[in-house]
Length: 309
Image 1 (cartoon, rainbow, N blue to C red):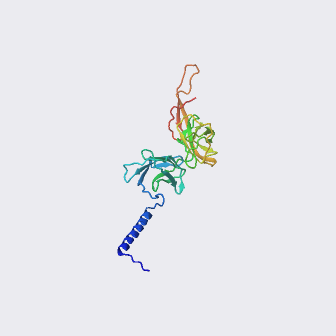
Image 2: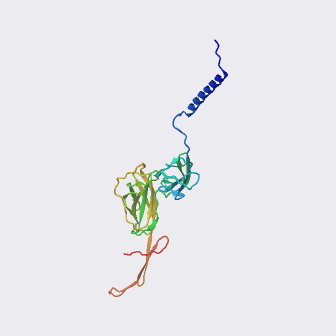
Image 3: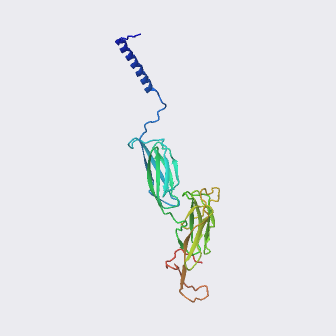
């Protein structure tokens, strides 16, 4: 049997088939495959800076500031942005403590970098999403483990100086409540022990001994829990202030024993005198003038304010 289809009907059928295919293609293109995963990111830039360019080892620290901008210029700051802080020196991580790692209304995040115990160059990096910036801080040699300032006092048995020991851990943080022992040679008197305060400071008073010649007095500071101690002798006559509460134990330090020594010079004193009349009558009336000169033995510098008994 033969079927005859007119040209007009064939043409209409072809149009219908094309329409069906077109609709199928449109439905296929509009089909969703899940949530959109690629959203355009806002270009963000950050400025990192510090309050100073160098700090000293053994207790030094510096404030780090980061300002985050939105867009390609610096006119609009970005608040509520999360900033990550890292710090290192010669491949070793340094301790950096974030004060606010979420930018405030001014677009600023803040952190404190602690120097640690070694000199060198510290790199501080602030990161936000896929952008970061780095600043470099010079870490200079800190004071020795035990330092005297002033390093000499008169050997009159009266003069005294206050020695301050700053106890820090291996991260350069102060260790409060740490007992520090002090020992002085040459029979000199010194406060035997005191406790570090909230700033890690422990103090002791050193008093000289009478002597005509100069004396080198060695002072030793030690603690049962302290990674490093910096001691500094300051002005004369300051009262000892000690923290007798040892409730705040050292957190990360584990080193025990002698922390270091310093030498304080007791400058010897020489007395010389003259008598105007070598002989007087014992009659409660005669008198003579006696002149006493007090000088430092080595330098010959006159000593003012000396009390003679």
